[in-house]
Length: 580
Image (cartoon, rainbow, N blue to C red):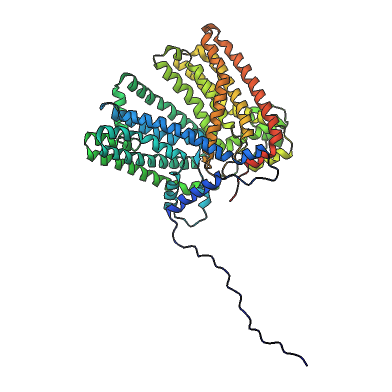
């Protein structure tokens, strides 16, 4: 007889823990600020140690934090210098204070506009392209990115520097003008950030068109040359204490968003409170106008380039595909591994948007620096500086060209794995990369140097200047090669050619600064020798400079090539972007 088991009531499983629902609603501007701070914190946090971690890997895990601290220290020094400059302008005489304040404010805004275009790039921690598929209104996106951009080393440095005018305003006029100076500094910082983002967004859109890249380079160079008269006016103002032209230009600048917020406290000291309101309103209107411009260009900047024109016409040239791949200027070379690397680099510099942006900056710098430095020295009272102005300017210009190679592997990203698989020799690769940059930049640098020597009446300095410029370029190539192998970093995966991850802008600036100092130190004997030689013998610096530059470039690429062959896996790991 079967025994019926007792009835056991069936228990229901406990309900699973349900996470709190995320509140729905429209995205807020504060979300972008919180996201920026969270990404910045995670970026500076060192990675997890490996089981067999050496000292090199341990240092690599803390490299971002070290670079950020170094950038913060340099930023603090720049902030102290800027604070002293603005404090000095606010304590100047009544007839000098408005003009100096206008020039100082305009210089800060123009620096925010042109320095990202020419050197370090823009902090793109919150890349607009990552928000392209999210239902975020463009107005909220622009305001959120503007608010997030206020948190970083450059904005804090700018704010601390411009707050120097508060000191003079408080000493001279009391708390009222001091409060106006604080408001002017805040509005001016918003103008700086909005102008920088709007210009880089619009410029990145233009750079996608290969037809306008040459025009853009020419316009930047001409704009840089046109700034030289403004520098002369400031020098005249500081030397003689008065200049009608400088006063007139300063008065015009004080009614533009470039300088109006920084001049408002001067009107408060004079008791013109109506003008205070007008100048602050001009700054706010400038921010609104720049945000409107940014609003119009950010969609195309984050979505990417539309389908371009039709494919290029390919006719039957009667040449093999390998020979057709080689650019025309180097088509005389025999097809080899070096020729292939050289051709690849030349084509990438002309076609990749990020590299093309750097190339335009180099072309502009190679034209602007000799013009500005030579004519400034020629108009000064220092005859010693005027005697070697062209030579000294080529020392700077040649070193600037090597800056683009400081992170030459970062632009390749994961594509560098192909070079590892094919066992490309390190010295061969570095030499091809350096030669490609030289072939694309030195023709214009030579033409600009010849033009400057003719217009400034320093034709006798032309051979020495070319020798010093070539030497500085060779030295910078060697220094940048070693730096790029020891401290590579990834570039952001974005369509913006001026993008720069947070913390990497200060890292790039520090690495460029180190390479620049090394280049100047090793190239210093040539300008010193120029100052010691008689005028009839300065031409010997041309062969000496070529030999000195080639020697140090060979030494640098050989050392860097050996390091690259040993550290190729570490370089690939460092330049591979991390995905969240």
